[in-house]
Length: 116
View (cartoon, rainbow, N blue to C red):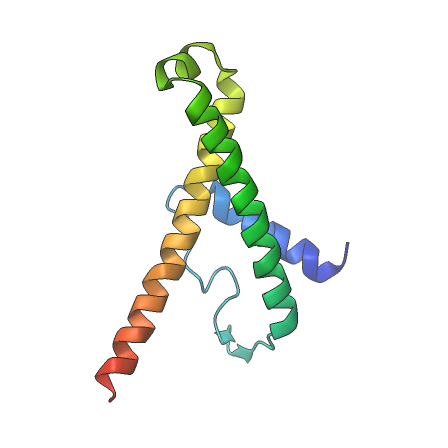
């Protein structure tokens, strides 16, 4: 694994562990980080987003399978508690991350419309 991948994993691990998640600056998604301009590899970002999209669709299908085959009551009563808590934590972390992205997109779109 490259040092860049190690750094990304460390940042994401920190973000997932934080109760309120992290803002995009702490994830390194800002143009300026500590006063140093960050170069973005757009083709790598695009490839990573496509991969994430497929992975998330797969996870959504798995969740739908469980939802359609089992009641919430049965899942809570009979599922492995630790696995269920980990799945919930992962879903919550994803929700925080994509909500942050959505908020930034809305802000940029609002700013762009205000400048017309």
